[in-house]
Amino acid sequence: MKEITDEQLHVMLLDSSTKEKGFRILMDRYQEKLYWHVRRIILDFDDTDDVVQNTFIKVFRNIHNFEGKSKLYTWLYRIATNEAITFKAQKQKKMADSIDNNPGLSNTLNADSYFEGDEIQRKLLLAIEELPEKQRIVFNLRYYDEMPYEEMSAVLDTSVGALKASYHHAAKKIEAFLKDE
Image (cartoon, rainbow, N blue to C red; front, side, top):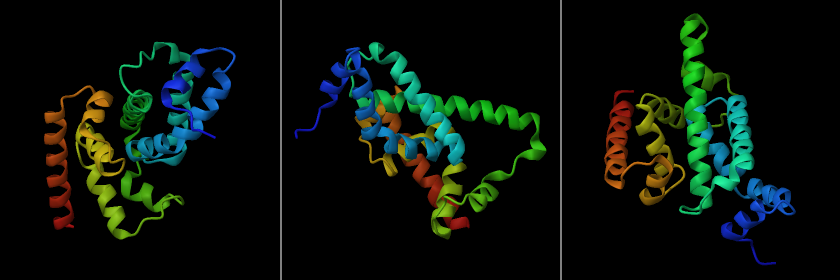
């Protein structure tokens, strides 16, 4: 059977008689990619599940707003990225109110039974977490998702040149962090 294109999927999602089937296909196709994208921003697997669920709810409710000017998955990444950034900001605000309860990334990784990385991966994650938010997201999209700069530009609403610069600065900071460790 021929795979349904994103354009066909978009048409299915707009038609009330095929919306649910289209949404199941959409989730099957993109849930894992979005999960790992959000997980690299949020780090905690429970919170990641919540953010991904909120992303898909937002997509389901707002699919009629997708104009098709970008790829469907680019639109999904943009929503997921914004949801993750908003969630993280709200969580950091709550943690600032109760600073004593903040376990830190190192303790979070050590306590995370789903983290299967070795010491190098743990150090890389710590280095990435030290980056400013925008650099961290750009680095993750390029390094882990291997997203082309043109698509990142659509997701983050930033010029390709600025994204290349952000990635370069992020890579240099990570390199310096790992050398100091």
